Picture 1 (cartoon, helix red, strand yellow):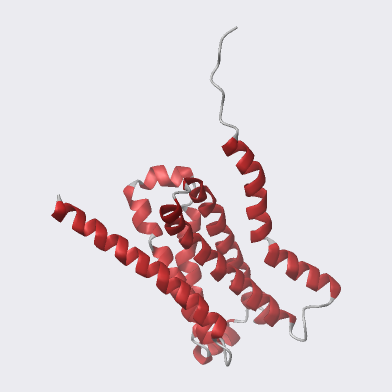
Picture 2 (spheres, helix red, strand yellow; picture 1 turned 60 degrees about the horizontal axis):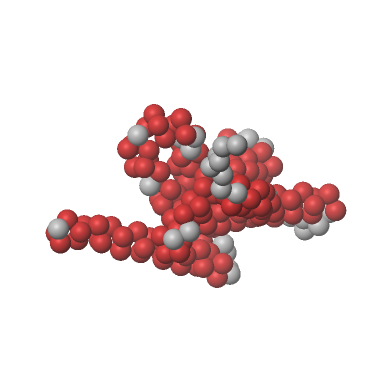
Length: 210
């Protein structure tokens, strides 16, 4: 009887538990909207509620995805990174729902109304630009795209920080009165950007020390 090497069970067990959990957490916003829609609890303005919730979900998941790398470096928990892609794709999913809600439910694809609305409320244009930045990032999130793009892939996906900044700006500008929630997202993004700057500065100093 040969002693075959045992395959590690921890990663498999962890995936069986955490992967469905990540999906459930990411789908909670959609689940709540469906439930509220079926039970008639979307409020006096259902379109506004759906627009706000989908945009909120997109921005939160975008920031969570950006926070994974710093958390991995600070905690040493390497397996966190394997959930970054699915979180990022869910962020794009909600951003798409957010845009479609505006185009279909709010404006009924009326170009005249949309043009007038964008001129009146420029934050809508910022939100559209944010989605256009996220689109190529979502399309190139596959392993095949990573292999095909090589080093260019990392450069392309740094645009996620631009998308997050524009998303925060879009959300902040869209609020009329209470901007506390938007400022919280801005604060989180500021911390993440500061971490990137510190990391970049440390890498610049390493060759000098050598």
